[in-house]
Structure formats: C-alpha cells, structure tokens
Length: 325
Ligand code: HSE
Image (cartoon, rainbow, N blue to C red; front, side):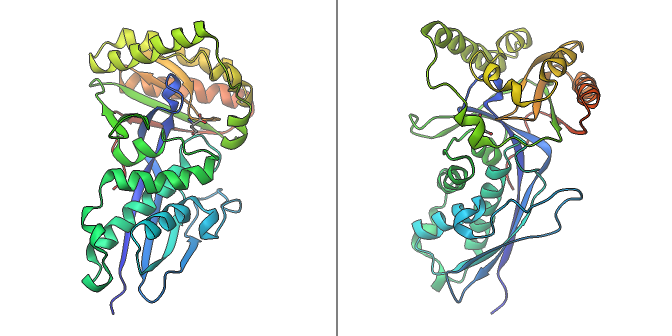
C-alpha cells in the first residue's frame, strides 16, 4: 500500500497575554513547529524522531519516547479515544526553542494532532473508525491539551488554544465551547523577544503563591475585562491601561535578566501600548499601535538584552496571526 503521510505547522504563542493568567493566549507569526506523520498501518506503534534541528538549537532535552513527548502524548490520546487501529512515525521539526515561553510544547502537540486529522481523511475505509468523520477543532484541542499537561505539568490551555485556533483566544473549562476567539483591533501589532536563556515552565509555575488578596483579585479582574473590552471596541488607550499583570509578573520577573530595563525601554517607544512576560518567560512581548512601533520596540528590548550580555531573537506580527494548518 502507498505510504500515507501528512504534515502540519503550528505557530508559537503568547500564554497569559500579560493580563489573563492561564485563560488568554495569542498566536504569533513567523515561528513554529512542524510535525510530519507517516501512518503505520501494520501496528499501533508510535515512534518519535527529530528532523533538521534549527542551527544552534539542541533537541537533547526532548524525550523521544511517545508517552514522554508532548506530540506523542497528544497522539496517544487521539489514538486511544478514536480506537485507531494504526500507529504513527512522528517527525518533529522544532522551530520554537525549548523553555522559551513561546508555547513550544503546545505547538508540537497541536501540529501532531492537526497532521493526524489530515491523515485520517485519507485512510482507507477499513482502517477509519466511524468517529473520525466528526473530528472537530474541539476534539483536537482536547487531545493537544493532554500533550501540554505532560510538558508543563498542568493542562493550561492558553498556548494550545491560540496555536490551534489562531488570533487572541479565551479559554475556560467552564464554557460549553472551551475556546472563544476574541476580536482584535485592526493595526494592532505584537513584538516578541526571546533572550537566550531557558526557563522551565513547571518550575515557573511552582514558584507562584497559591493565593491572592481580595483587592488584587478585584483589580486584576478589572484589567482582564478592560483588555477584552478594549480589543473589541478598538480602544487602544484602554488596551494600554489594561495590559498589566499585578499577580504573576512580580513573582516571575526575577527569572528574566534585565527585565525592568527591557520594560522601560519598550514603553519609551511611541505607540507601545503594553509589555509583559510571554507565558512563563524568559520571552517578553509588547503590543503596539503600528508595525513601525512594534519594530522600534523590538530594537529597544534587544538593545537592553545585549547590554546584559544576552543575544536575542525578535518576532513581529500583525494581528491576528493564523493558527495551525
Ligand atoms: N499560563 C502558563 C503559565 C503559560 O504562565 O504558566 C506557560 O507558557
């Protein structure tokens, strides 16, 4: 039988978006992971390998055992749920550096399940379970989330959601549809800068205090509501006033060298609306009114990292950015 293969690309994303811990996420352009699948029609075995790692980038720390790998864990969940009689040879091309706060574990998991959905469409009927015809974004979201649970030690949805759906997403297990895509004002641009340091998400979650005061709860709720309202009414001032993190940023900023300087430098650029940590860091991001401002912000942030002795990579996106494909 002809080899059945497919591939999918999933973009990097910004978890939390600085204001909505574990519930808001933003897809970005220009960087992501690609997963290629070859269907194994003879057995349910799952093998993982890496292809052409990007220059200067090491995959050493990523497990190749399917159960221990985010893409593998997502595919095993899909295989189990659909009672698939086939397995996959999984080839991952990591574009997102490990421990960068750019949603790398989510991207591998999302690319894997999107590639699987494509292969299921071309499977011969005898191998295709009835449930496959109904495979929805919501199902793929659930499978990819299992991969994320493995990567981060918790199934937080704020990277998987934007990575799969694109744009700015709001997710909560309390909604009947677990992911809502929110409107974004035309012209809004994002700068993401990744300094060459690694932060482990599990550790960055463990350092967080479990409680907030009532006053902080009220203030942060107002900021999330203001941010979402600002995005939907194209109110750049409100977006700028609301993009603030009173809870998580103060507890994690010490993990990022020169954090205060990069923040100050970003805000010094005319048109910069807000700045915070991307996911659990060390990447930082800013939202700006225009592409020109977003480029200026990147230059300022990178100059501060350079002064601290760190190389960095910058990615600028016109929003909304597309999800996995
Ligand atoms: N919401 C997660 C966290 C995102 O901040 O721990 C990790 O990328």
